[in-house]
Length: 132
Image (cartoon, rainbow, N blue to C red; front, side, top):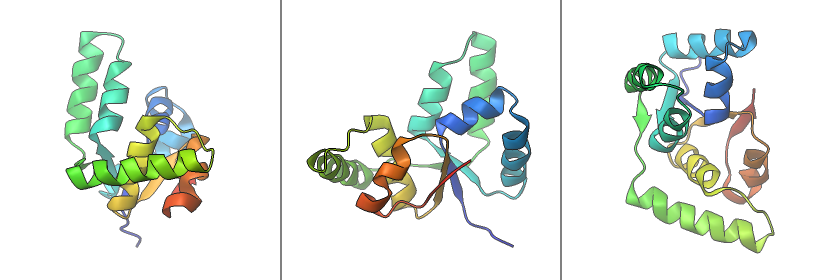
């Protein structure tokens, strides 16, 4: 049984909460197997999109139940270098995506996403990612 932790990107959570069936089954399976994880920037992006106080509170409680990778000073320092390397190779990626990719790389977990930016970073930083 694969017990690898998976950092689930905001793009997947948004589709999951919208009820995309294929994602729903896979994410629930990861949660039940205690393989699903998050981080502060993903939580912030998802909560920012809440449509009401009630939805915000429910989402916040849902994320509090998941393991969360901390964004440490070391991760910030790594993200600075990654951002610099990306720009030097003319790859323009949003800061939030750089930070999420750096978290996944630092904690050596698989990043699950549906975002065009993460494959661009794979070669620069050795990111392990899978588009769902």
